[in-house]
Image (cartoon, rainbow, N blue to C red):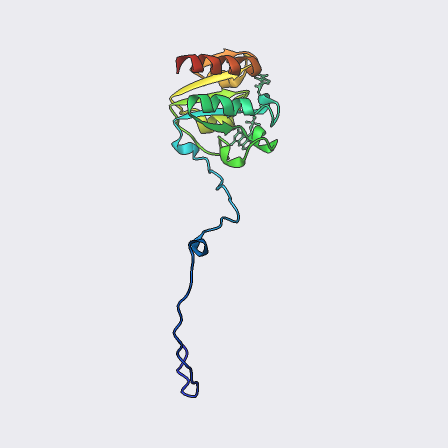
Length: 162
Ligand SMILES: Cc1cc2nc3c(=O)[nH]c(=O)nc-3n(C[C@H](O)[C@H](O)[C@H](O)COP(=O)(O)OP(=O)(O)OC[C@H]3O[C@@H](n4cnc5c(N)ncnc54)[C@H](O)[C@@H]3O)c2cc1C
């Protein structure tokens, strides 16, 4: 607080402020949605997409399956490096180690660095066009097929059950 200045003189005037309701209206100048940070460590269901998904646009299939199941989206490093999804979704040695009840690997080959982050999931389902893909070595259920055909069929089946 500044020191009092005895040389300064002032006159006290009474006044009544006239305020209307509109003077108290709050105006929202800008709306910024906070980006939701994914927390894969806490996820019960993860649908993860890899290079086999083929592109950022097609990655919506992975999001759709995750939404249908009420799960979160994970990814291989190949998908992250391609810029299809943010790094905080990466599962594996240099990503997050996850232990969900259900992990669905879509178009992911199952490299050792990826498996290091997901092999402790309670149930692993792999969808891959290549029957010899290493991901099938850790999967409890394997679907050999084109993810572009398999995912829509899975979503249809889920919708019928819910
Ligand atoms: C030091 C180091 C750290 C690493 N850390 C990680 C890590 O943390 N996480 C990680 O994931 N990787 C990591 N990697 C990279 C890892 O070695 C692999 O390169 C990467 O996991 C491969 O990703 P992917 O399986 O998506 O791609 P790919 O190996 O290219 O596999 C794509 C798969 O998609 C399948 N496919 C293609 N088209 C279709 C279709 N239409 N339908 C169904 N299946 C299809 C193919 O058969 C193939 O199996 C690391 C590597 C190094 C060297």
